[in-house]
Length: 377
Image (tube, rainbow, N blue to C red; front, side, top):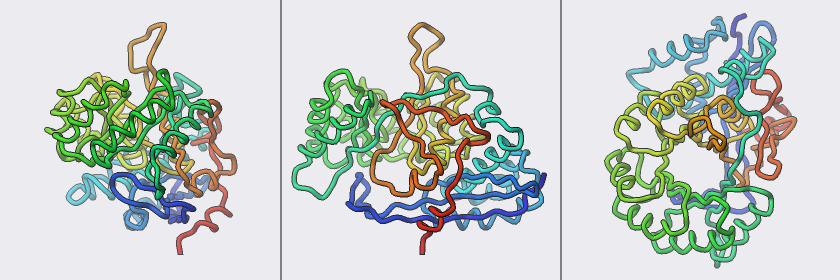
């Protein structure tokens, strides 16, 4: 079997209502999908996290290296692309482009052998995964107290047992929002907060100490990803577990985080950190260092499916016991018209539980009419 075509699909959709994380306001959402076709008619799909036109340029530039190659040689092709771009692309959009290619190759491999990707990754330890609702961003409305409480309570009513609040809008405002959301969801639902690296260690520690009383599951990206010393300072100062890694890349970047003991919870994004090949290696390394692993997921149904296959094979955070603590899925609940529309059969949750696709490859089929509808002009 040989690769014959590599295509990129840049998608874009306007939002009915703008929302903000700590990094800015968003009125559109984009996606960049990778399609790889073989001479046997098998097509694999992948996705790149990051700026869509930039990652598309990476994939389009790399595509000639892949034509004529055997798509089943996933590790060899990963190493070939990484080595050729090592001088210029150890992190960032180059690795994000490589991630989408790698996911598509795994999709081909599963379809070729007629098995789900999780079976090729070592076999499923679980067939369904607990999901947490990501949402609770800021809107252009007068009263965040009201809409954050209503939104959080809505997720609990849907059956989610955990939710994540976006912070990074000022320490006092974040502390108030955390209190409001905790009151809205009650004492038994898990609550995490995510600053999207809005603070330095001084401000992050101050906020952490103000919200510790609310039983926070983790404090995500409290400081910029480059500030490993800041991560260590925040981790040492707080009882809240510290999470991060969505802006880190490959096993080499995560090795430095793990050796420095900067994180309690690693959050590589499969569509950014190097694809399924690399994220399985990062997961194995995290287990060796005693670091929990819950992937970052902020993409279409392809990203969700790929993340579910990896989550299916990961060991529990705790050693085998009667009450193991299993890794969980980030389930984006913010507006994103592209997310499920590109799938012939959407990946949905049932009372906060998501099943791992059991079809061959990633187990999803792509709706080409949706690709045309959302194609960026």
